[in-house]
Length: 26
Image 1 (tube, rainbow, N blue to C red):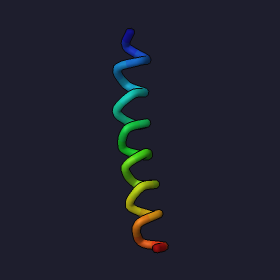
Image 2 (cartoon, helix red, strand yellow):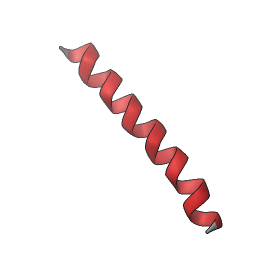
Image 3 (tube, rainbow, N blue to C red):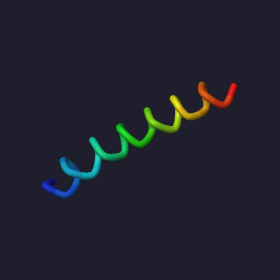
Image 4 (cartoon, rainbow, N blue to C red):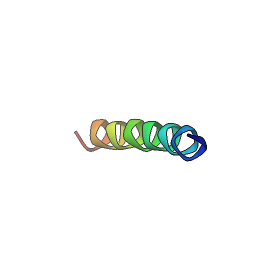
């Protein structure tokens, strides 16, 4: 469970960053 708790926030942040990157491209 520790791994999941550490991994999920990182995934969420990277997902938001990719969304922002897509918005910046368009």
